[in-house]
Image (cartoon, rainbow, N blue to C red):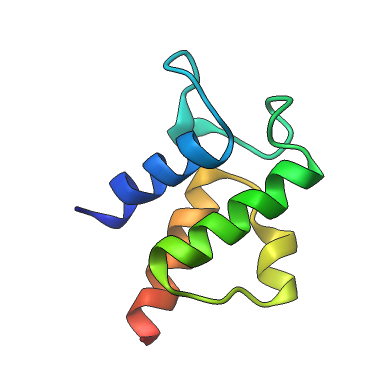
Length: 79
């Protein structure tokens, strides 16, 4: 499964999203579930799914689904 598809599943599960949310265009704080607490749960879920570790700047900079895709893609390329 492609990174983008796996990441979409992580977003849906970690943020408890329903089918009405356009995950691929989702940005931090666009929805109530993606607040600071939801953000940390999402970061942990992504790290678990992809066996990566984000540094503090990356956690802060993860502002959208697209940014998360780019970050995970970059980290997977370094593995």
